[in-house]
Length: 240
Image 1: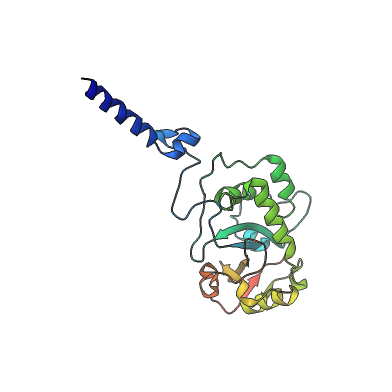
Image 2: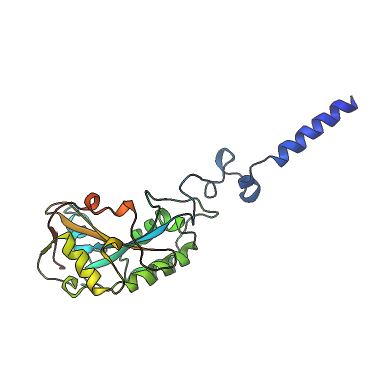
């Protein structure tokens, strides 16, 4: 009998020591899982190869809204209009990317953080979405992520021809790349790419690649130009 009791106690202790570390640290969630703390594979916060800073051409986005659609980026009561805006800062693998990485706490963006980003990311929903999908994978926390995004955004000088044009601009993707390379010291063609789509092959966005320290670097396969925009000409709707 004593030997049987000892065996049962040993089994119970072994089961306790073998409990998953995630449950021990964060407490069990639904079905014994911690909802913001578990994950694996390629979606691990801080585990990525480089950043893609994504600048979107706001008039193309606004032109794609449904006729009765509303977006504060496109329907400003103060009359302000946007050309390039910060769409987001995306942690990238050399091929593929992480997204919606599990975090120890709910991926919440405080209103004061949203407010201070609206000058370059002119939509509450955009700020929240970008942090939940991409910012959680940077491993910097919410304020660290947006501070880094702003710092890299401010590093890019937009060429003069893209400053609030009042009529449609038609250029080649190669010209866009050349214009940005000429305007930004240290930037080379392999460090950025142009994405297009929609009616008239509208310019959708420009992606500029940085290493984790914030220096320019060559982009990975995600920014293959032929995949993002293979046309010879792109159009930029005017800023109105």
